[in-house]
Image (cartoon, rainbow, N blue to C red; front, top):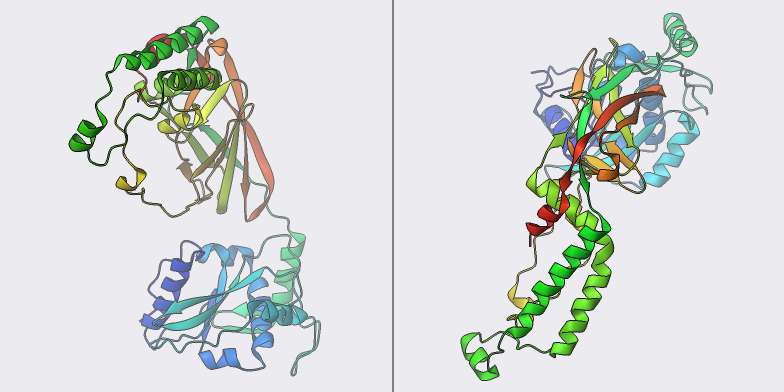
Length: 430
């Protein structure tokens, strides 16, 4: 049975590499090593010949034809040591840093490769990943003699084997070196309404003052609350703490809160707007060529007083301090509240910096020939001072397998009418 695994993408993560090893293990005896994949039993990883073995495969994989390499695993290649069809034999765990130095003596610094270990069936498997060859790249030669091979020899990968390059192989490598990679050719546009229309929220100094006065009145209103007798409170709420602030201390807390929150009132208005009128925006990335682009990253810059958020609730993270608890409110010890579950620290699909103007960096995506991909959506809200204006947003795109940067612009228009911030703040969430 041949190898049963999807090769439309590179194997980058730990889980993807484990699945690659499992696919080799589960393959039948008739499974053949390929142009992009080779495997060895674990005893290879315990001999003195390991650095030269790895160097030979790294050089061979690095000297492949770029277009043929892209047909599988997005051009990456793999030497897997410690597995064969039907059996995970395991490989000795070695010092990767030391091994890398020893391999470099033979392969040189130019080939891009990386070693790693994964655990499958309770055994360690050693994997060497070699990055895709590129047009315009020089061919790679052996740097130091070993065995019958002299420095300067060229290895090349064929289907199922790595061997010395012949005349036709050298001609291909010379052509690869002469031929420059095609420049990146993509375009970015709004997915939907074009130009995008961005809502705005306007908040005057009078609106801020009115909100602060309202907050003060609401908070100080709790001073009229009659405090329960301590004994009665313990009977009704055995774990509760009695009020430990004097009325004057509470007033001072309120005044301090109002001073600290004042600069954040416009932020709270924007956050309340997104709660009330959530609307996502999205960019569409399009490949204008018949080439494969690997891991394309798009950056978007939006000038002026316009803020972007990955989720609508993110605006509240910058909304300033929380109000002090009401005077006389029952308070419970922290140990009665279980800690929130901590999620894994995953890379976000979009990174946003709202310092000055808004800068958005999107998660990398792969683009097939003439393919198009919607990027991760986000929220936008503008300051009322921009209402009715047209804004030019600039974008740039980079791919891992193509040199150069592609740049362009998309237009956005700020809505002519600003939302009533006073009404929004009347209904802001707790």
